[in-house]
Image 1: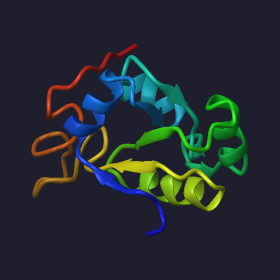
Image 2 (image 1 turned 45 degrees about the horizontal axis):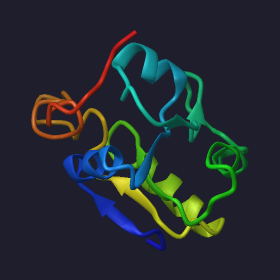
Image 3 (image 1 turned 180 degrees about the vertical axis):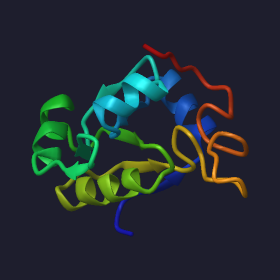
Image 4 (image 1 turned 135 degrees about the horizontal axis):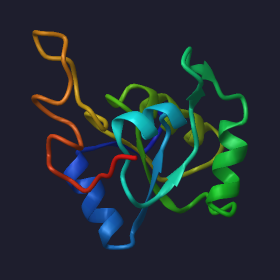
Length: 132
């Protein structure tokens, strides 16, 4: 891990609300549409389509969304915190100095019944989200 670190959803939201951090959702358009999304922040897909093919333009798109400000605090969100960790690492490798992975992600980890959203994650923490 060479990115700035992991941060719980509640702490990430507090930083966003305080205007300190920009939330970047790295899930696919399909996930955001069908599962839900945070109503603020930016969207730069780490992977796209139903097969989740890696987005080769991720870093370039991130740079554009953040207007080249590589010192901006960014908190990256995916479904469970795994893709966003990879995205945070890629951002750090590209020179972003304050890229944080949102632990647990939007839906959280799988429980014993192979279901998400029952133990942790953004939605479980009852943080703001909307669904199309």
